[in-house]
Image (cartoon, rainbow, N blue to C red; front, side, top):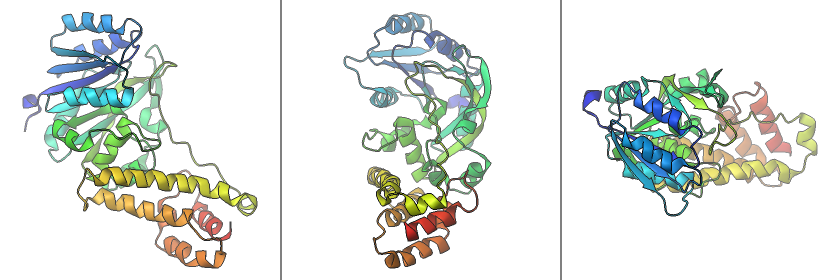
Length: 339
């Protein structure tokens, strides 16, 4: 299949974006592979964004569909609406304040044409300041999508990587329109996840999401952006002394929070993807581990078997923070036994 026969849509969401929208629009006009349509959903802007959109649409060399919401939906449901209105074979998600390199849509469309089993893919980006000056920081560095993550991804462990924290930036994403039947509607009951994180999980569950390992846009960082970079910070180091002296409830709270998050992800995915999906197995394995850790009995003797079992199976190592030292899995297991 050739990328030239695929129709391309861009789902662009706006809210009070007049300061930077014209530059983003300029980058869309310069695409080597122009879109066939741009769907713009404005979420009740109170500045001049709507007027600017109408002006830009009048001279666009592609079809522009402008939708002005009557009531504010919020960015999750606004992107859901924009995506659902797109008619192209491939849909690119677009923020109002970035800048796409001219070859972005061409490169990503060609990748999707060459990989028909891939339903969703995302690229890297270079971070820029408010004036679009390149800051020399690839976005994947900020979110710790490092070589180890890429190697696991290549081995079919994309779901495991995605469950460690947000890895896919919506505005760097392309997806096939049929994929939306699984991804939409976007759930609102998963703590810590917004629309792009959820969409990536659906792709991870079916192992149909892939990386395009090159920066294809500038990602503008500024005070007024609706959704900024969301790096997952390295877990705080807990000393051996703290493991013996801190309140048990303080130890269990983050474990229980992770268990709840994983359970909500499973509940929502179970309604969308086949029960035998490989990514669901990776999710269930992590959920079992965190359920065990967050529900260990008060009696330390009864903790020995489940803790040693998961340690022997390598689960403490598998879910240790990648930035932690080699002792971290053993210290976590020791803490589960003694705290």
